[in-house]
Length: 199
Image 1 (cartoon, rainbow, N blue to C red):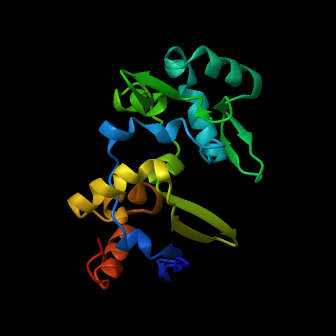
Image 2: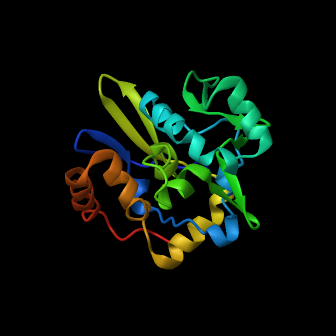
């Protein structure tokens, strides 16, 4: 059976895959242990401004990083250009983000940990905060948002269903951080036109 492509809607000039409204999601750290920080084949997409913010925070988080991560950063910096030509955070062993730190049996973002503790002004790349939404820049100011499905997030899907929490509601804070309060309010108005998300 071929999966149907979800309809695309437009909110405030941004193209949005409608499954951002109709699908459920809520990270379940107790089960996933932050696996998204250590899986994949590239780092998190970053902007030049974010790279500057990361570099400003580097001294603060340095001691939280593994020796391997420190070595990678010493050699190539906090970011590199991946095979698709995108700037992404540097990674260790072809998958682990260099800013992964370990707390008990799980993974945390050293950048976010320092920010939450009031030690830095930079939290983490917006691409990380927005996940499972992925942003695509089509040029000429046109931006698209897609819901990215990843097998390692199956527990987040189950938790989201249990809480009946749509993707866009789960990501309220980072969506406002990226696009502003007025845009998010418009998104909620559009979402209200949709039927209750399916289980």
